[in-house]
Amino acid sequence: MKSIFSAFKWGKLSLDTKDNFGRDEEAFSVWKVLIVSKNIGALKCDEEVSKGYFFEDKKVEFITVDSIKKAKDLFNEEINLAVVIIDISTLTEQRSLKLIDYIRDEINNRLVQIVLTDNDLKGRKVENIVKDYEINDYKVKGDLLSNCFQISLIIYLRSYKRLKELRKSLIAKKRIEDELKVANKIQNSILPGNEFPLPKGEEFEIFASMEAARVVGGDFYDAFFVFDNRLCFFIGDVSGKGIPAALFMAITKTLIKNEVLKGLAIEDVFYNVNNTLCKGNEEQFFATAALGVLDLKSGEVEFINAGHNMPVIYTPKEGCMLLRPNKNIVLGALDGFRYKVDKFKLSSGDILTLYTDGVVEARNNEKVRYSRRRLEEIICKVSNKQVDNIEKKIKEDIHNFISQEPQFDDITMVILKYKGRGKYYADDFIL
Image (cartoon, rainbow, N blue to C red):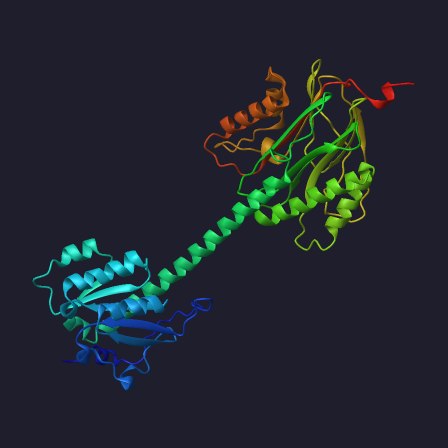
């Protein structure tokens, strides 16, 4: 009988395309084709014959085994068998199909191209085998031994190569998704939440939240006490999206809090943070931010807006109005910039709402923006003026507004309600 390998004396298999496939942890220098047949004499590879078979600049190596057990052993050892040709006529149909089950189901190899070969297709239920078993081709042995098989082999190797590339892409995608999930957990741990709740006091209510447009977001917020009777709160929005923005967000938030806790004036806080962010900022990231410190005793607020959205103030008498602070540049844009401070006073029942672009720039399917005016209307309309309820109603209205449109930016809010002077202060007790 003519050897299968003698059918491959056409010289070099080649395609025009070349790439770097395989130059990684699963790098290989040859394409391995396994032939499983009891008729070793007919399938024995002549070393001289096998020299010079290439596909995309890699040698095609033929390996023959005469039993199912040896084939299984090779699959356990080899991670890069590209094609397996199973001679069903010498191994019996049952044993051949069990080998296919082993390859596809037990070791979950979906990459290798499985080709069944038989003396002829008469007497077998070929249609059922093709339908029930995950094989790539079923050939008469005469076709396998002809020179036309070179075309089929190119197709098998190309299919194997593409599947391997696809798997590599899927693994990379899964790795990125896993990393994003971890980044999301880290980011959530940085922002105040259940584990590290926002501060509470008789003089105020505060509620904040961020709903990221992606797995991780670029918005940030925080609130904490500075001494006994001063509450610091801030909000920010970093340029860009994804992990780079999340990293810049974490750095910016940390810098702001650390500088505030040093007891610095807030203009010096932003001056220092801005200078730090400007250093080595080759990617030219920046952050808009608004920072306030509320004197819980008097209701006075020191406030800086660094290129951020103008806050909305609600008063029981006048409804909603905009706070129009001094104009300052964003953080991370210009080294040495001196920030200007605004001062205003909150009365009992006043509500200050800070928000990011994702709120007022949310768009519906007609590309109409949610708008600041609609935000003000919702704040005024809400009958229950508890800060968590206001945040809930705003979010509900945003999602009703955008309907089925995807959220394109992070939705972040900090809502502060001043309730007036509390019961006890140290200077209340005059000896």
